[in-house]
Image (cartoon, rainbow over all chains, first blue to last red; front, side, top):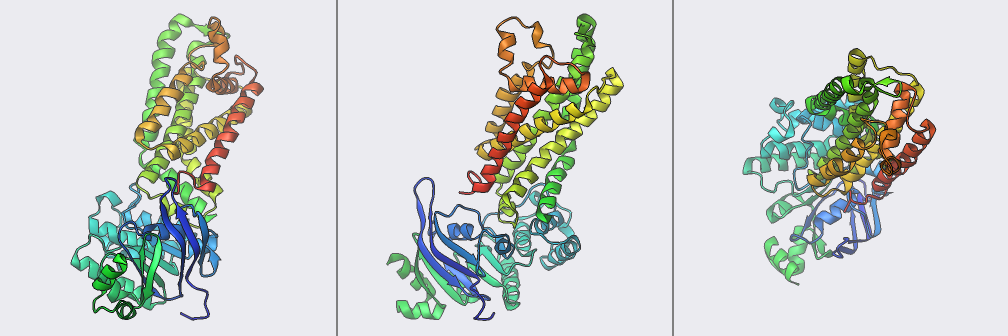
Length: 244
Length: 251
């Protein structure tokens, strides 16, 4: 948005060592400016999901600092600014579509009137109108994926984190989700996207970071990365970066 | 506080959506105990102290139904949320750890109260059970529910499979309840069983509740309440510690 704003996300020396000794992130530094559409690419086990979990308070950070719009990530204010759509479907099996959205809004401190209005808006935006009273386990895979995204956006987060949102979805839904994410970005929301689809990263993201083994390998625009690695295609950038 | 209110609502909603499993089934099984043990054995045993046998067993059976429900509810709700990982929606929300602990504790307490109140109404209608000391009864119930609702949370957080939660319920809580003086006064037990009963924490809870209903019990009500409080407070603190540190909840 405004370059004077504090960064949407700032990681300073972030290190995560799991209880079994695995070092998933080591002295990781990253800054994403407010309003950016930022892509995070890397193979399985590179540390993408660990990074996201650290930002969203879903893991115990070993060392380092995570700031969201200038506030430590553990503060209630910072938490309320982040929306997360996880890679795996993790919907509450006891709740209907509408309840899933309403309860999420409630957990995130929204007022009742606002919750009802916003839940209805999300249900319509994600084409879930006919399923509003259906419980999550009875939805199709595509509908669950849409609900997951709707839930992440329900409380109007300033920073939306999408962990492989289009993994395993069909072409139509992928296009639909892309359109929604683009609209969201155009409205000023900062987006952090992890994906295995290089075309998706190139098409959507203004900047891309490549990570491997818990370290940042490179960070630039798609064109900048191609130039830096001296290749013509992002696929080749990826192969070269991961092999280096 | 909005987040806490919604978490409490969610945990209560789960109980009400599954009411046949969560409330009706335990009420029916406890009523069967009252009918089968009370009315059939009551003809042979007649009285325990100054109380008819079918009345004597009611406080223990209500306690048993309530504490088992409080434990099972919270162990399963938190384990399910961890297993399906929708607990992340709560862990990432702008809520304080004490609000999460309290919110997750409530479901088991509400379920236990629904069972307890239903059983109480039925017991009054069927065997005319009195409530001699309502203050002590309320205090005993509050402490007992806090203890078992908290233990349920702790076990649900540590459990790695469904079997772990049912193991504690079936191998620890149920046997301790049965030998905790639900069906008899420990004074009728020969030595050393009577003395050993005093090492069973559920014995004190049953006695405190029985005192609340009948105005008499095997040990001092204040000793009973003290023992239950001495267990309930650390159990809740343990659950709170897990939410504060994220241990077992966050990788």
